[in-house]
Amino acid sequence: MTRTALVWFRRDLRRHDNATLAAAAGADEVVPVYCFDPREFGERPYGGPQSFEYEKTGGHRTRFLVESVTDLREGLRADGSDLVVREGSLEDVLPRLAAVTDADELHYQSLPATEERTVETAVTEAFAGSDVSVTSYWSHTLYHRDELPTEPASMPDTFTPWRKDVEANAAVRESQASPDLPPLPSLGDEGVGDVPTSPYGVTPTDAAAGSTLPFRGGETRGLDRVDEYLWREDRLRRYKQTRNGLLGKAYSSKLSPWLALGCLSPRQVHAEVKRYEAERVANESTYWLVFELLWRDFFQFQFVKHGSGHFRREGIRNRTDLDWCWNDVRFRHWATGQTGIPFVDANMRELNQTGFMSNRGRQNAASFLANDLRLDWRRGAAYFETKLVDYDPCSNYGNWAYIAGVGNDSRDRSFDVLWQAEEYDPDAAYIKHWLPELADLPTEYAHRPWTMPRDERREHEIQFGVDYPEPMVSLARTKQ
Ligand SMILES: Cc1cc2nc3c(=O)[nH]c(=O)nc-3n(C[C@H](O)[C@H](O)[C@H](O)COP(=O)(O)OP(=O)(O)OC[C@H]3O[C@@H](n4cnc5c(N)ncnc54)[C@H](O)[C@@H]3O)c2cc1C
Image 1 (cartoon, rainbow, N blue to C red):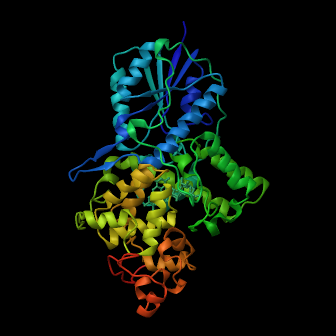
Image 2 (cartoon, rainbow, N blue to C red):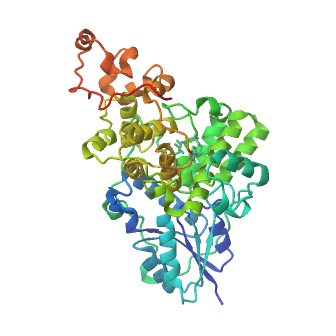
Image 3 (cartoon, protein in one colour):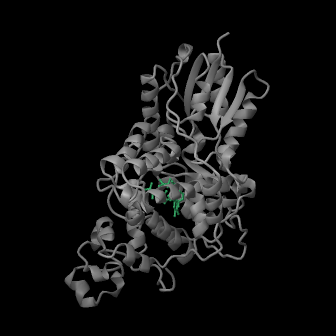
């Protein structure tokens, strides 16, 4: 009897080191499928008691996703298989495809965040009572969930003790090569389907000229970026010194979009770092890239532990003592990069134009919204969700909650944005790049244009409130 397996691709858009695909590959027929689900596009409610609407997936990530799915299809075709592409609710699409192909098994990647888990439950329930066996795999973290020294439910809520425990008591599994795949069975009249160019009407946005790195979706470019950053450009040896940079394509690895969609396995990155350490150099920088991947893991396992806790305004620490406000005008100023604080504005304009922002920028833009404006931090996080090309629910909401003081750290995480600006952009090159209206300002005033004397404003032909906004708040120099 022919054994037919469906492989439901999710945030694992790759063939290398893909436990789900590898497990299914032993069947006689394999049907790889990606489905564009309507819940991922358009205006969606942010759940919970203080609900609001926001755009789920913006144009930058839509483009990256469409490219990634297309690249996966090309890769599977080169392997003698194909990718079936559908649009619709997963709990409708998958049982229908199982019926058409007479499938015996469904294999999928399990994910920790609330919406992803809700979809998994709906899919599993749709197959309940059928002859199709359903199996899930954990495949998106560096350390496998089963190999953690402490179950996620009992893990500490602070990063350092968790990291030390994992580093001392767990090992990273080896990255696996792509499996050989059997052919696709007949799909009858339905065919394999086209990759939509504008899923649910969301038009992919081309990154603006001046983008720090043109992110092209897919496993091919993800693996190539590892090769470029580590081997061709030999950047890893100085990562620790450059990682807080703001401008250019090389200050950090820029691997996050491929990791977020699973075009790249973190274990593959780890394997390449180890090879680099053996063949080039092992130093603080090579360690630090893996250290950052541990931060990524930490948030993934935190979401296993706390369920929807990190999405709540009060966070996992149930901070009912904090006051948050809701002001559309102020929020718009922040979102469009019109706050009058150049460092915040430059970062927000970079995000809007490219779908990317450095880690330093994210910390400051988030802290400004949450700690200086005291606007409901979830709205800022949801805005990042719309815009980021590398959006990941755990990394995004985990980091936002952390900075807003409701997450994984009990210390004050607010940043002195002006101090940060002058420390990390001392020559103002970053803000001048993204804020052309300030490009001719003397560097001494660039981060605090409101301190510029009137005669110099006339000389430089700049009018605040006309050419560039007055600052929307006065920032006290109290923090770093
Ligand atoms: C408010 C806020 C929101 C964020 N939202 C996201 C998000 O949606 N998706 C996302 O991937 N990262 C997010 N980050 C984490 C971090 O900013 C990005 O991962 C990083 O800037 C991506 O650039 P890179 O790949 O060059 O990072 P590198 O410095 O080269 O780091 C290598 C990898 O480590 C991981 N990593 C690094 N820092 C963190 C961190 N603080 N938390 C989790 N993982 C980390 C990423 O996968 C990254 O690709 C957020 C950080 C903040 C402060």
